[in-house]
Image 1 (cartoon, rainbow, N blue to C red):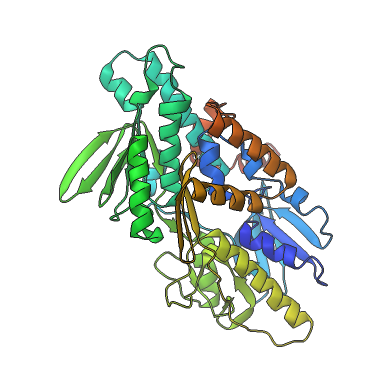
Image 2 (image 1 turned 90 degrees about the vertical axis):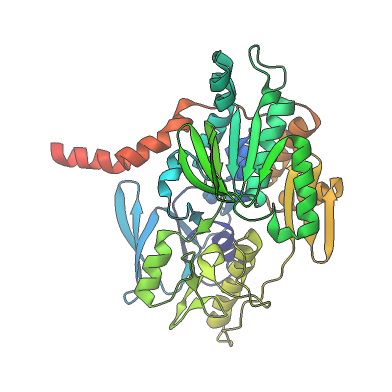
Length: 443
């Protein structure tokens, strides 16, 4: 269940095993989520970060790929219930690998999503691309200074890697890439704010790198507001609170990059198996990543809650998903071979990376702390290594060349459908099911 890093790497590790694999995923592609912000800011196309699953696994003959969203798991009958586009179906299993990733958390304020899209899906990135580039276009049409300022104000909520990278790229877009392209506005007057309730940007990177990242953001013109909590979001602005003072910031474009939560499936699976969940809704697993009393069910990556060797919960990052996927596959192969299984999962932390702007990044790799251009080179190498497919690596390099060495953005096309269709789907429901219902009524 799930074709993210955890599911995909588990499947690849089982390519020579005597097993039949059914992969169930809600989209037809594997998403390289760490680069979604580059889709949103016009550097990369969605195809470069989301290769088709069937193409990625075309040489692996023991995999049957099915499109659909898992709705429920009958752990007694060992059957998964799936909702596909206009069709429901079931899949039986002997062993279940659950790697459905994480969803955006609005901390109980889900209504914020209509006005501040997250950064968890291709739909999110394309909607944000339409909103960001559209904001400059609409601002160019107005003559009222307050209206122009509202359209040229961008607020990014969340100062972790995603939010920091997003704020930096919007700043570069406004101050460098779009400079001189509008007759009636100066894109360099755009205001970019990075807001977070914690006390520093990139807080998990340590004080030294956090301070360097904040200084680099300031050079780019990004206003960093830490210890600042978002209390309201609407179509034309955002309200924040800091030190007991409440302030409204007029802004048409808001990006939500704060907080993650387990998908609803985690709660249903926990209820069906008697497993416990943590505050983020992640399932508490055994040391070998299986569920208590259910060794046939592995829960991986962002959906699992498991303490590392330092006693703290493992972070929701790609490396945890990749390594836990490989661990689950190894456990399955051990069982098939009649060997001892149940070995605990050991996470090897390879470090953390985040870009600030072109040629500038921060990297925390073991005891090594890098910033500036050296860290950016490491960032490029690591992301190219994990991009799936040779073609994706080549085109990504070409687009980075255009964006970082030149002043262009290769992917600036945005449509009204990208900006508004997702809201329409939420309002009117699954179009496949609506069509099926209409056909049934006619029949």
